[in-house]
Length: 460
Image (cartoon, rainbow, N blue to C red; front, side):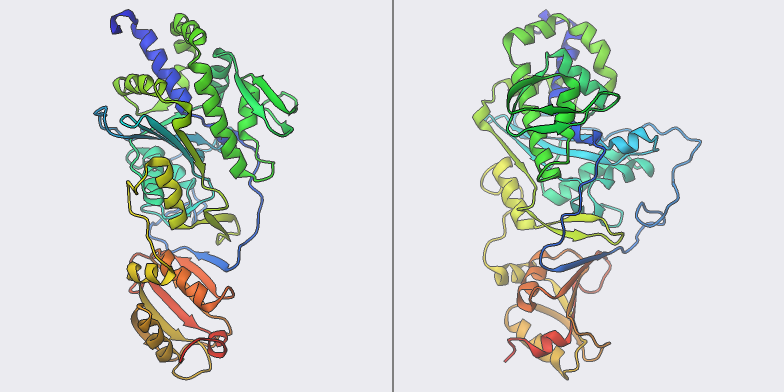
């Protein structure tokens, strides 16, 4: 059968598949997710610099203004045809691109996974404001990883650092990445004859360019490229970035349905050469040709009911504020792992879900806690140390005197969500939590006892 295909037709089929999996729609957004507020605890974040120049700590552009940097993505290992495949779909922030910035943040991050054995697939959308540890840099919004990889000209560029950051945050191996520019996406939608969307609530959308805003009414309707793009990138709706992610996944499935229509597929094949010449320059990926061909065949075999989807939304995060006052999303690791394992395979295929109550999870985390007494109650640190030790906590040391404070404070240096949550529940919602990432810290967590703990505690 392969002899039937001309070389260009093979490549355009590959390009179609890449476009199908590579929806970079939210990268074309003009708006910023508005501040939704904070949940419960007062959350603060400080940076511990471990790089001379950092996006978060310097206004200088570290790139040589006279140099021309062409990002090179990471190389990929050949696929054996049997293992699960996961691709990171990336879209760049339109504001960075349109303003001529040297590097861009990512604005769409969707993990697409396909299991050739079970014939199952899944999509997981990662919000741009998710707080993450970025390898080699200070903690920051996860969408800044792509920028840092490009601006510092790291091996593999922005795609590689984005992959490393998401792998570490979500806990899944990523095989490939794919990126398409917004004009190529619009043109592709037009070339396949538009996509059919079931609009569930009237939505006013704002296309890019000189086109006027359009209100989409209720019901099924076929959208051309520029409206499909505007539909997926719209953020001024209830739910903000979260509902936008749901619409992006809806668009992906609509492209799949349109692409797999027999008559449409034949038409596209007959015009493959011209279409390839028109859109190939707008696609960037490390997906090899041979693997893409295999995945095309595999994707066509997966039934709709075997495609799972999820969004890391308000159910899986807490809301917080960064040091420079931006709204950020603090991941709740166990909840994200539950969502991830549901989409990527049952039975905890990557890392086991921590089980048990808060105290059990705290014990398993083995965090070293250092306690300082900031209250006017003598020996409170010793009594608290004995009490926490009796509950299974690991106390690394105590300090009997410190500057007085009314409010207790927890400082997490190395990322210890279970211990932090246990202490939060023990001390109450008024405790202040700071995430000051410092892998060289002698202690995982510092606990400063305030007068609030001295006057209200369960100590014997």
